[in-house]
Image (cartoon, rainbow, N blue to C red; front, side, top):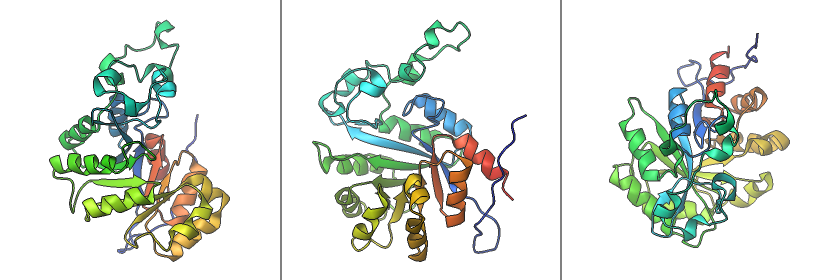
Length: 279
């Protein structure tokens, strides 16, 4: 029988009660489901994820879609670029089959809803979150560089505004590896939470003097694992920390030891199981 690895709780809230980090589904429950599809996000919510993470890119006709790569080779088997295609063209593509290419030959595989594998617009994802029967947060990453520059952040803030989510108390926070993008969000929507993503540990000394004290810092788990001084410096500076992409018990323990407030994972159900087993 499979045993759940033992996780040691490390943080407490101000009342002394034990707390746990927010579990954020990275591109949905993407370990077992095709990333950024409606099916992956529905599965993540069914598994109990506290929040959903997505990447957004702008189509040629001005729609924000949830796609990570600038080209579509990996997830839709076409060499096209998201930024040069209209939404109607993207809507003709299959964004799900790549995850299980032999499924149609498996007589025991469950039938797949073709609609669940279509390109997902940010608006549709927001509508699902707004209609869900419990509070769900969103971590939305804008991808750069892009031919549309700051228009991506402008369209994103406008779309959040349509839901009343562009001010204080919004369930959404905006993330980017681009300092310019983070600054644009701060100008466009000063009350939205901003996450400055950090790709390499040696980038932090350069970013530290120019990153607003109120911003959340988002390092990758690989950098925290290989450069433990990064985590120590962030904790010492009193920074709120959100970590990507946390998929194993060992990596979760690093996060708990640092007292991070969110873990972004391809395996939200596994993270919740591990956290449930903690002392």
